[in-house]
Image 1 (cartoon, rainbow, N blue to C red):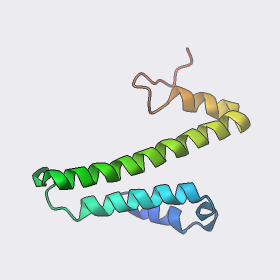
Image 2: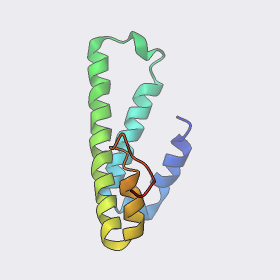
Image 3: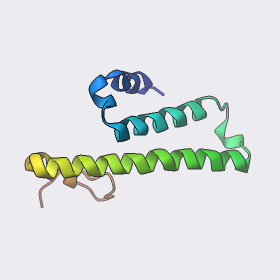
Image 4: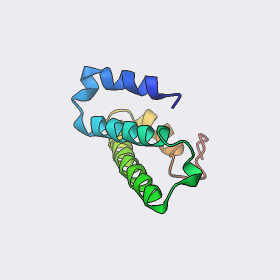
Length: 101
């Protein structure tokens, strides 16, 4: 919730709006944020609501992964030095380290 203003500023950027998949990612994240914000106590929800939230999380996560992969491909082809650090700090690698080994 504390980063919501930042995300809104990103959504206002006309250049980013041209990238439809990124815009869809932002919409999915905003939707999930709204869903969570409207619930007073997420520890006391019916199973049907947990399933609904799980679907919203899955939608946002899948889109986020696709955007990250596209970003990494772009770095690999255009900025190998940035690609190297990005791969070393891979958020999907539990043992990620900035150290070059």
